[in-house]
Amino acid sequence: MLPTVLALAALAATSIASPFHDKRWDNLKVKHEWVQTPKHWIEVGPAPTESKIHLRIGLKQHGFDELVKHLYEVSDPSHSRYGAHLSKEDVDTLVAPHPDSTALTDSWLLHHGIQPSSCHRSSSGDWLTVPVTIEQAERMLGTKYRIYQHDITDEQIVRAMSYSLPEDLHNHINVVTPTTYFSTMKAMKATHRIMPEITSLDDDHALQSQIAQPGGLATVPASCSTTITPTCLRALYNTSTYVPQATDVNVLGVAGYLDEFANHADLQTFFSRFRTDAVGADFTVVQVNGGGNDQTDPGVEANLDIQYTEGMSFPTPNVYFSTGGSPPFVADDNTPTNTNEPYLDFLGFLLNQTTVPQTLTTSYGDDEQTVPFDFAQAVCNDFAQLGARGTSIMFSSGDDGVGGSDCLTNDGTNRVLFQPNFPASCPFVTTVGGTIRVAPEVAVSFSGGGFSRYFAQPSYQASAVDSFLAGLGDTFSGLFNATGRAYPDVAAQGQGFQVILGGRTISVGGTSASSPTFAGVVSLLNDFQLANGKSPLGFLNPLLYGQGTAGLNDIVSGNNPGCGTTGFSAGVGWDPVTGLGTPDFGKLQNLLP
Ligand SMILES: *[C@@H]1O[C@H](CO)[C@@H](O)[C@H](O)[C@H]1NC(C)=O
Ligand SMILES: *[C@@H]1O[C@H](CO)[C@@H](O)[C@H](O)[C@H]1NC(C)=O
Ligand SMILES: *[C@@H]1O[C@H](CO)[C@@H](O)[C@H](O)[C@H]1NC(C)=O
Image 1 (cartoon, rainbow, N blue to C red):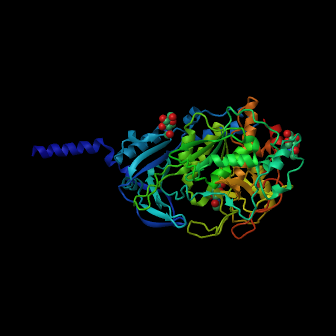
Image 2 (cartoon, rainbow, N blue to C red):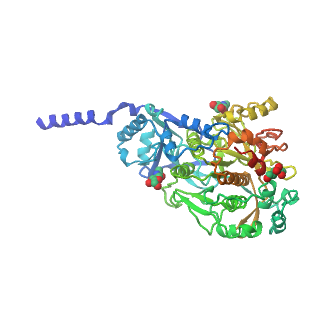
Image 3 (tube, protein in one colour):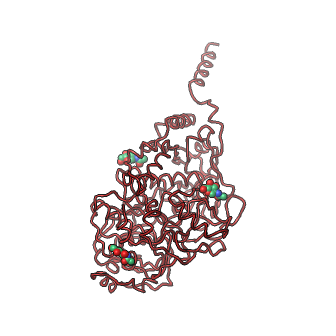
């Protein structure tokens, strides 16, 4: 008898002392779910339950609203704190989770047999990385992981159609990944297009020698209407006489993702043909999370980005961030491990640095509706932090006008709606649309533009956007969300860019060209501020929609068709094709705070 009694007593003691029978963790409530398998992905089988994945848990950032308040104060030229950007420690304090959020999450992990001390935490504690098996993740999140294959790229990923969290955690956890965000680095669209119909230039030495003379070019050469080189852009955007001074501190960063490598030899060829004074200058590469740097495999997107940021900002130091993260995928190994989330990997890395680049450009994006709201919000919140730290963040607006392909919604109703792009639709970045031709510049037809369905209109753009909406009247009513964050904010050339790839010149277009161009101009403005002992510009939009508007060339014609419509039209003032317009460096320089 005795042994049994002892055993029972021991059992009772365990069940009281351990959290294993805490019912609260059984009450699961859906956090995000898709009603249909995301377009282009085909389910090919269950995920191997013993495979390991790293769950990334984003805890609610306790002082996030206050962080946004700081962001707007330090970015508003009329505020006394303008330019007083936050340090890493300041931001960490604001985004740290409430101790209750950490404690509850830890006890949920313990309930599932995971030691909280085995998790990797971001320095403020807002992101937890938890190594688990698929089986463990399925139990924790009340879901089933499956292998999905992309119908065009054949890439395989492990994702879920939905995930849940205990109801008590919904107010403490913002997002868990990888779960329902299906896009991956390779499927994420780089927004360039190769244009074989445009004859490439051998060089533009004649134009370069003209621009080098006192007075420069009286007018922008007519050739710039079809073929763009840095000489065209420097003349057009009024940067050609500026000599950067703050090159010891100023940095221009280019965000690149898996399989896109910027080539050093191609950059030298580019300089020898299109910016001879820069021959010998080079960029540095920072490899994030296993990102590659294969110099035998130059990427169009990477070369376009780096050749034009360098071409505009020389001799400012440029950094190419190559973000990777997945072990090489072996096609015959039935354990796909691509569970990465590239934006989060890169932003987590950057926000963990004590110094951040003053200017950053990214030419990737997705249809907003394909990015789960909780995931999009987590990424957008990271951009707010980077802006508060003093980085000016540029994104391409997308290459599908108001929406690509069929524009059908993925919520089960199959309606045609304009399809905004993300991260272009995040209110904390500066989104760049595209133009063509010179004298006058006009909107390029593919220029992505529209209104977010996730993020509300920020106050900095209310007056500019409301004027546009008043003029638009009922046109396209119901196809877009008039109360959403509107974009693009600005524009720059987007067609006929001369790019060196593998030693050959090709013509490339897309808002992928516009974003690095605009970032090049911003980097020179940051140089000017730093050389004068001022802070870098940081988050640009409050400046651009305020006094900065006078330093932009308003683009007043062209439109961006899509979804079976002619799209929006460019006109006087802000419009969802070219935003406030293209930069005039000289004018912007004169009106900076
Ligand atoms: C942040 O940087 C520190 C110091 O370089 C490093 O030890 C830590 O692992 C980094 N944390 C993350 C989340 O990357
Ligand atoms: C419109 O945008 C707001 C954010 O401003 C969002 O809350 C709302 O759900 C959106 N409406 C539609 C119909 O997409
Ligand atoms: C170019 O910049 C200069 C100042 O550097 C300014 O006077 C001029 O108005 C700007 N714009 C044009 C089109 O020249």
